[in-house]
View 1 (spheres, chains in turn blue, green):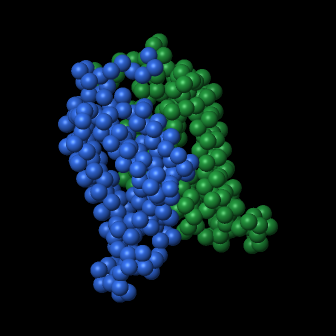
View 2: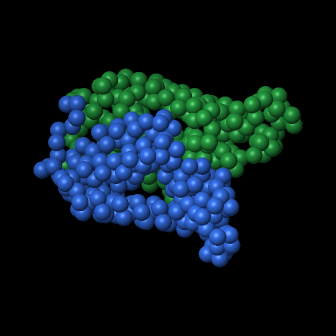
View 3: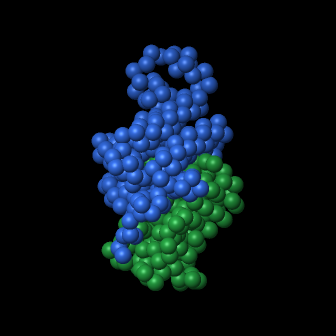
Length: 194
Length: 194
């Protein structure tokens, strides 16, 4: 049910996702929702967001382990590739559930806003650690991690609207060299277009 | 009514914004909505998104005229400052209506998705022209404009969730020098942290 809630929210936001629809989509027995989520929709939505936040954090750690070459731009490309695959597979009909919930539930539910803070922090911390591991100075890594996450979220929104991957391509092309340049002289190339 | 619709959508998305609520918020006579927007909610939402897209495009052009110094990073700072003021004034309760509509209406209404494509294109074109005017090479300007818009949209979402301006600060600090560096040797500084 948590997975179904997240998938439905990715498509049409929190407000338009009905509880009954989640139960049907999850092929769950009637009454199970009340049993597992006595707090109702708010609790289920919160769990779905926690789960998606954990997935995002895990992806970063998994990519860093497997990266070749071990550069910040390769990490960015790996994260962008995950979304290239996802958007293409879903026919550009589904975005990030964290953004969806931020747009239509963060102002009306303090519970959901709290979960979103946790989810984004829980994504920024492994992203920061990953950048440091890949050579980015510790004092710049938190801000660069924030920029990467912001730009990725925005690019997903615009890619979804346009129905093409150009915003993700632009992100990988333009931010990759910036991240590598920040990772110290040995990894720094000349700026593009010079 | 268009303004009221945009303001309500900024807070809680398209799905949760009711037509009656818009009429009340706009202090408009009953029946006026049906008169001006015979296409109903979809038509009114579309008009609100067109209007906000035009505002975003106009802001870029207005800032470029008044910039001092005339650098890409100064343009970025001016755009970020608009949102710093907006988020602070609204107590972090309202984001960008384009993102809100993308999150909860783009997959269910082809009309709204079409308006969103126009709105983002209508924002990217003046942003691209502005960057070129400020010295960014024409072949890189469209991608950098896309990255700026993506990162700005994502940073607004995360700032709103966190209730602080850190994502916007990170964006201005980290992307500003990148934009200036792209604007040719005379304006290019050394990378930060070197």
